Amino acid sequence: MEFQSEQATSYERELSEQTLWRLKSRLPNRPQLEGIAALLIENEFREPEEMQKWIWHRLKHFLQFAVNQVPYYRQLAGQLGMDVRDLESPSDLTKIPSLTKGHLRQYAKELHAEILPGGYDVIRSMKSSGTTGEPVNVDFSRLSLRFFGMLKQREFRWCRYKPEGLMAYIRPPDDFPHDSYEEIGKTYRSSIWPYVGAWFHTNRSVGYDHTRPVDEQVAWLNESRANYLVIESGALESLAFGQENAISSGHLEGIQSVATQLTSDMRRRAESVFDLRIDQNYGLNEIGIVASRCPEGGRYHVHSEHCYLEIVDDNGQPARPGEMGRILVTGLNNLAMPILRYDTDDLAEVVTGPCPCGRTLPSFGKIMGRYRRSAYLPGYTWQYWENFRNAFESMPQTVLKSLRQYQLHQFTDGSFEFRYVAVGDSATAFEEYISRAWLQAVESIGAGEKVKFEIKRVKKIPKSRGRKYQNFTSDFAPPEDGSDPYAISH
Ligand SMILES: [Zn+2]
Image 1 (cartoon, rainbow, N blue to C red):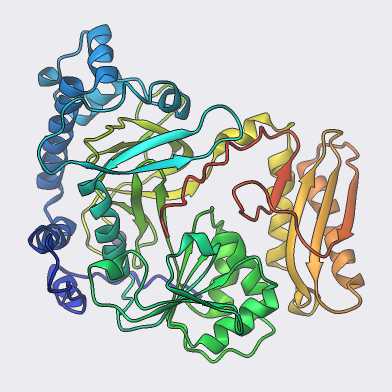
Image 2: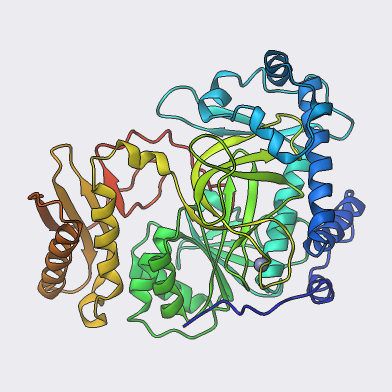
């Protein structure tokens, strides 16, 4: 079943959807928020050429600011002999070296603007604590943070979430602001939706800790009668395993998967279990929301009002249509700490031509997260994992019904361990299926080597740092620095 409508929307339709979202009356910054909301809709349907010009104008303005006010970029421009006024088009950006997380850490001080224009005060510093090296600090200007809420609302409008609906979060409790906690029922409560509820009138929201057992999560969600759910991708997959055997009251109208990569087979399973399209976005702690998945066309539209996105090949040149390339992001609203061509460690596919939705914002195709980690893994590891995962797609429901969570782990001797959490007594049929799936995965690669593989039923899947579930872990992968590249995109 296909969950993308492929039907075009229009400027008028979006304007009418926006009327459901009423800004609160006594906001001191209300005129500015109204202006941003109007601009966002207008930009969605500009002529592509006009949009390109608008983007380039903003980008050049931002580059000029960075070179004038930010010591790191002033020095870089000096070394390159670069005058921003000479840059003619976005392709000239390739002259500027990309910025890595290491640079961000090393030059944190030099990346701060010396003088900020009025209204661009720094109001929050985001710290992603590190287990390797120093933590990365990014300071945000007020405007930059405003965009977070406004882009979140744009996303909800695109997905047709209605603010009068009840919003549910199954997340680490720290990640959704709440007013109260109820011991009985284990429910976190808030009188508004997180983030957008600060400015727009919304209904209440409820939250549940994602570390609680999956079947409890399923029961809680179904009893909550929530209309919308926000949940991490790995937890969504577990929830789908649990939900397949539960009786749903059918009140859910939208699900947004956040924080970690949702692969296409995870998506298909969740979509078929919940009989709903799964909505997604792509964001970075260091920038905010970068792009949101189009409900009609399935590609990701970049929020050009907030950032500029490039997809480059191994030589740093723009990747060609159909190719996967590294995602580099330039933030456009954070004058406090300008970040140009930030190397995200993720890959995306270059797409061309118009999106079926009719929106003309720049877009890209599928995303592959954190590609570099695979470079540390012994040959074929990734293929083993991919082929093995595919087996879950065709697994009969009768075999799958007791599964709740799983993880494949690779040890330094090259052997693998499959850990899983299940309900009920016997899981023999499931384990047999997993053994066969593993053999097929190994054979289909044709590596001809014997790989040690063990299956272990466990009570709990160990969490990796950063509190995320990971379906695949390896002792070969370097330790994570603890930052969560998508954490801000609740
Ligand atoms: Zn679209």
